[in-house]
Image 1 (tube, rainbow, N blue to C red):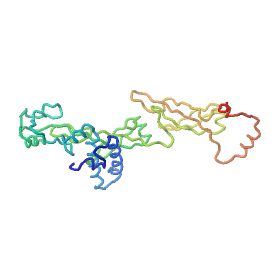
Image 2: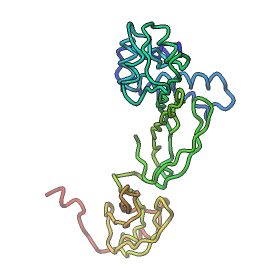
Image 3: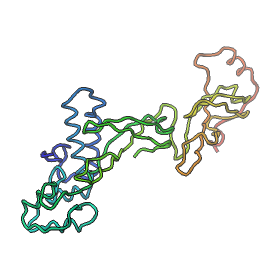
Image 4: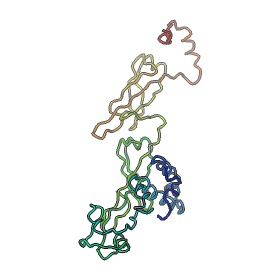
Length: 293
């Protein structure tokens, strides 16, 4: 990638890591191939944006780029009076099949790092890649496998574990180097009735006036399907009932609970019979007594 990664993401050189991440997310949502089928221009831009974020989203890589140690593609820049042995001894990232040989010129060193020099093939682990995946609330809670398209046009099946919260296949290696890893950042869309509270699920359940006074069995939605629950007599708005094990799957085993908050709801249309009954009812009580005290 010859283009300046800061320009690709549309941020200044002194941008914070948070600003860089926000810029990437906005562009990735706009340009992702799944949202632009058949649009080659959007696909190429998505590749550029992903490559730029792979560089600037990693603080260490960004610092090396800013200091001139690596270029915009992530490749090492030639260093003055650097020897191949310096790279071979540096650790597992660089290794050679044919022993060690010192080379005193930048041109030869540059060739070796590209796997073309006289010192044999260079093996280097491929770069890691960062991707963003947006999930429905229930998909994150129950888990699923998603098929995503990567910036290089290849595809990857991503297994979403049950209970995933907000929050490999990376770049190819050089020589015999292993491919990098794919880091998939998950964003969970909110649900219209469920909300998450740690490992618990919360839901507000409307009940009728008669169910509140007389109690009874009601149907309650859960992330895995509806169940039957008993509402005790004289249940009030705000009463919270617990459905054991109907929450989020825990990494160590078991599940959280579903917390059902009751809400008394009157009929949408006026009921003359109910009005007549209340008017004749002799019971008088002050529900605001605690506030007035």
